[in-house]
Image (cartoon, rainbow, N blue to C red; front, side, top):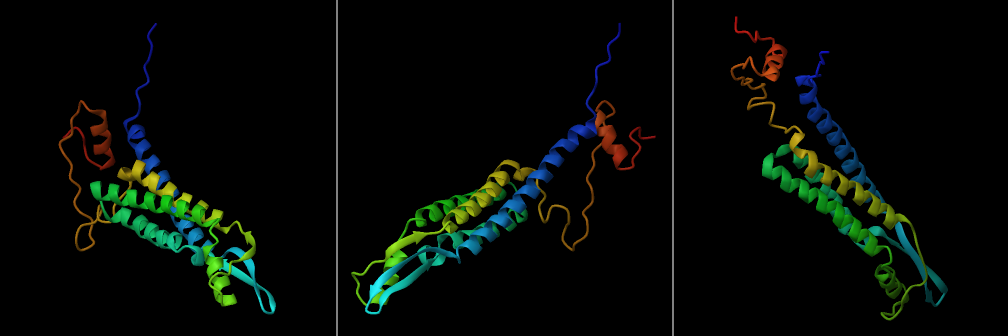
Length: 212
């Protein structure tokens, strides 16, 4: 009895990395842009509140994320710039920019978590309101916004990790077009009739692989 061995289709094998690259690219763009937007938005929200005793009674105090730390918002801007720059560079440059993107996300997470319990901004406002440098905020409460900021940083970190892992499969801005904005000539080598993948590529280009 003869057995027929299935041979993988050359085009199917070639398309697998392309599909993987497109999926990782879409996920990285979505997570990076969404994460940076979340960080910038949550940095403007109230992270903590409290009161300080003054002559007229208890004076309410509120500290926004930007009052507590400016690091997350700054790193979100750096992350956005790195996300765009990934497509403008190749090879080692892309690896370095991808690393910067990942570090921006990791730094945002760390800064947000450290700022979640930081009361120094409220204490400064308490000293100003009371006119006493020794005054501190009381009746302290904290919101979930620092943790939302950390979640946004985690999305930026994810985009960086995807860029490090799959960035080599992504297109570059200058990869398809030459100077002047016109498509560059496609360089093709001789077709090897013993290589099925060469035959398929020639057929896709509309060429006669037999050379007739």
